[in-house]
Every structure is written in C-alpha cells, then in structure tokens.
Length: 143
Image (tube, rainbow, N blue to C red; front, side, top):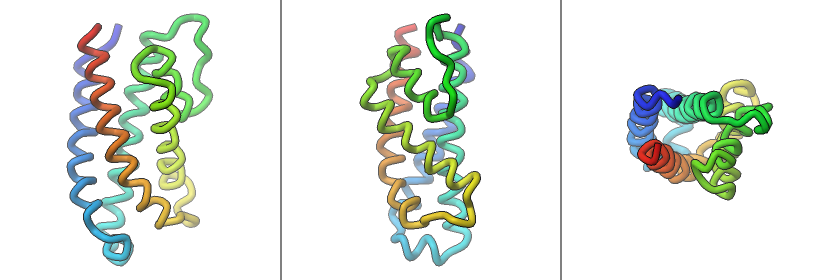
C-alpha cells in the first residue's frame, strides 16, 4: 500500500528544491562556477532532487510492482518502471531517467565533472521534475 504521507513529503521537498534551483538557474554559467558557494548549492540541489525522486520510485515499485515485473537493476530503471505502472508515459520516463547520469556524476565522479554539461542540465531538471511531481500527485489522487 502506498504511503501517501511519505510520498507527499518527498514531493514537497523536491518542489522546495526546485524553487531554489529556479533562482540559481538565472545566474550565468560563469557566475556559478566562479562562486564556490553557488556551485556547491547548485550541485547539491540537483543531487537531492534526483535522490528524493528515486526514493519515491523505489517506494512505488515496492508497493505496486507485480510478480512479473522485472526488478530495476539501476536507479535509471526505477523511472522506467513507473511508466510500466502507469504513473506517466514511457517517453517521459526515458527523458527524466537521464537525470540519473547527472546525479551519478555529481555523486561519484566529482574530479572529472563537465561543469558546462551539469549547468546545462538545470533547465531540463526544472521542467522534468516539475512534471514528475505533477504526475506523482495525479497518480496518488486516483488511488
């Protein structure tokens, strides 16, 4: 059974971080990378947004997956499983699942980051995760 309180709490935190991300996204790439605090804030927001969504994805899968459904082998696959569960379209799942690569780069490959690529992903993150929150909340309303 879905824990709606848990899910709505996570969604609220994602939405709060998206507001902060929106504010930071108005700075130029140069303004962000030349300011250590802005860069760290920017990176951490991206990490938290994706991590919280993965928590939600895993909860949905644990509670709603059928026996026949293949277990996700990666965080990226958790987004794809939600499409299989009817939370959102396969097209959206493929699009938003790309954010896991950004999260993994921030979490594991810090010394070799392509900061321009990370910065460029912010707009996609804002669009995709606002939609993600809408899809999750709409799905909960149906349940």
